[in-house]
Length: 112
Length: 113
Image (cartoon, rainbow over all chains, first blue to last red; front, side, top):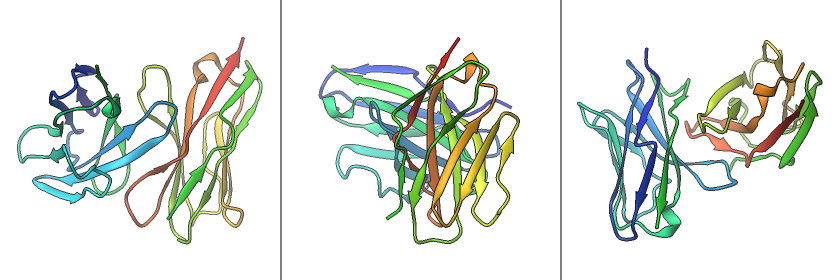
């Protein structure tokens, strides 16, 4: 049973470009969470999704950031018009219900 | 709002010795979960141990154990017989009625051979 798969592992974008981060949850997990980790800090909650539904996006910046978890395929975190301050590690976690998180290895986004 | 504080940015321990990492939290809830996660250089976030607040017994996983003091809102992690592979960042995290995990800033653990 593969764990939570995130890709790409590293992503470099120029300022103003779009970044797309993908997360495939563990088999049987229908809940996906995205967290952001800035250097030297713990993780900060961004968004919680179930299949085809955004449950809580209170941690998402109001502009440029969006997330989806379609019926088929991975969850996508999309950042439009990236800026230097978006540089961070983005982690996805999944769970079968609202407990028992399993984390992916993260995507390190670097904006140049 | 809940907060999690890890007051030790860095700790070092001799291989085979015991080390304790501190974590305090603030909450008005009575039912919640506490976690310790390990983040090695690979960046993978690995669950080390978990404690349910309603359980008085401290959780234990092999060489890892916690000292959970609910009244003091303290949740320290003890690592016995430290091994080189234990070197990593260690994060304390809280989850209450809200499913969000609230994280501390982390403690870097260095193992001296």
